[in-house]
Image (cartoon, rainbow, N blue to C red; front, side):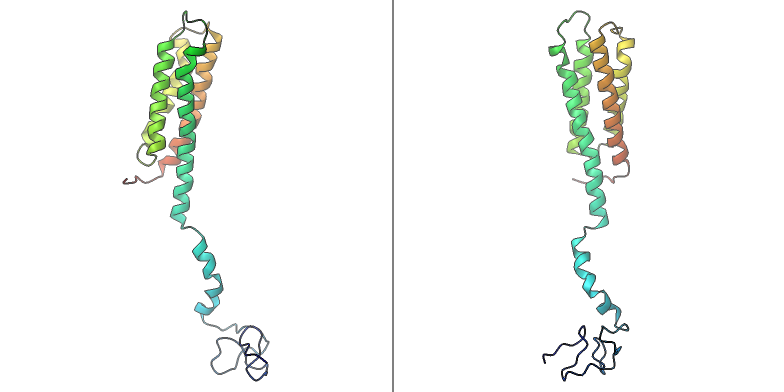
Length: 181
């Protein structure tokens, strides 16, 4: 019979007594299984491979906050570009606040692009985009183009989206330590 020490509970001579792993004198548990009094190192060895596969807590947190910071900011870039291009699709330009939409859209897109490129160091830019989104919501009333329903609704919807996405990015990046890149 082959030498099966430990888990099968047999000794080299085929005797089932005292064959437990971790028992130097051969006096094991006697029940054919591993010795329950084994040293802690031996008891944890089977789990070591799991510890090596799991990412460190900090690395996982960094990846999640990075994704929660960069993904909404990427959508804010798209919203800013949409707002910048809106005058091309507006049709009638009489009374259209193209300067407001183009200027605000370029600022939003630029700040969000910086936020995507450097998420750990630019959390305040999301706050600026929240303010710009608020401006887009109030601009139809302040600048007096509420009669242009399509343009007014476009500005207000883009403003709400920018505020929500930039807010998500700002909250996710609030606890992120500044990286030195």
